[in-house]
Image 1 (cartoon, rainbow, N blue to C red):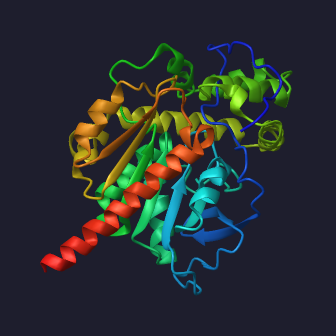
Image 2: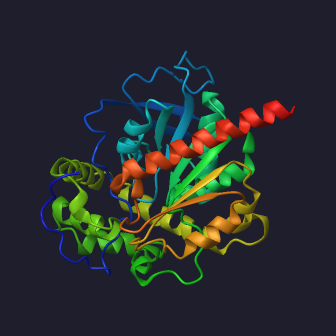
Image 3: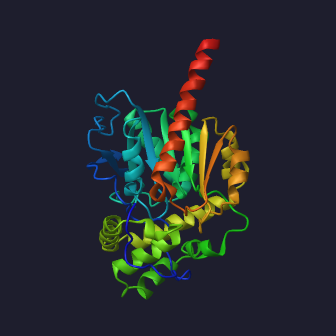
Length: 344
């Protein structure tokens, strides 16, 4: 990526509230389409690169698609399907990718039951995959989306061929101080209070704060990507449910950290059978890179990519490096499948 947006300065960690940029730097000029899919109690927006041929109407009927293997991308708290544009573009020749907007985010309206727990998000992903009939897919999640896709892979191994987790929001006993303000969004009323305290902030200022929190080096964002994020941020601020969704989703994520027994996210990670790629950023201010070793031990046979200069959204900061790692994972999965067939 080339030149930078206006200087971000130092973020105010007491008021940085949206942990994932609402838009990404784009897919290098790629054209994308967004359609809506209606499920039971949900309407999901689904983003696909131009040329994607599968047409899902929510009844399980899919049109003929290319021979590429299916992939599904799931964003994090405060994010949207746009966070995946660059990575989807780089992997478009290898997988038939789709990115969803989780309920209440991007262009998806809130769920009818108002449930924003990580388990509810996992059910939304499962519901979509069941309706689309595209499984097993290469499932790719970031942050909160990484927590949800971990649950999907543990509960429905039949739907997941490989799993890629980028800074997954798995429980930390000692979270970084820079992540505390995001956790505070879970406290009832805090999100609304933040909205009132920052009502005079311009979308440009809000976007700079978010990028400074999420990127290892915000200067890597192109002016085009910055302007795209500003436009998307301004659109979201007009949604009447914006702050409510942020509060409830943050609370759902924090609550997932407290679950014990078989519902504990680390226990679920140990149940994942799919080949797994873990990606962590050395400058991540929301999910500590020190969690990488624990995650590598929890997900059996996993492979680990650590990007020292990346922050929380490596797929947006270093999409080429992440794409190479995903390709290696997919190629190894094919090799293992051939070897298994030879032994049978």
